[in-house]
Length: 103
Image (cartoon, rainbow, N blue to C red):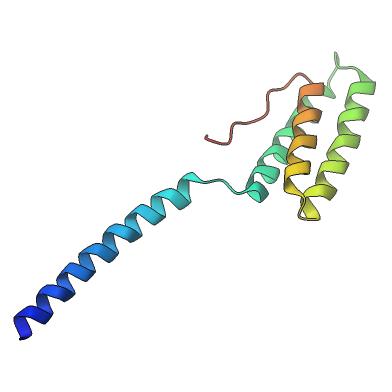
């Protein structure tokens, strides 16, 4: 009887370890919308600083800054999809390609 119980315990342990490994790899690969908001916000900060140097249009920087404020509000209000779109529009306005979710 004890051998049977030990065998089942070993099988259950093996299955649970396999499930845990798969769940962790999926969790690491997925980027939440909140994280994406943060990444785009940092990218936009850098783009505005770079474009603020000579050669960029002051009106483009002002528009991008206004969009950044709007995106910050969206992300803070749990409207991440709208925030992500707004960040992406601000980056495109400055001629920058938004970061990819899969990186």
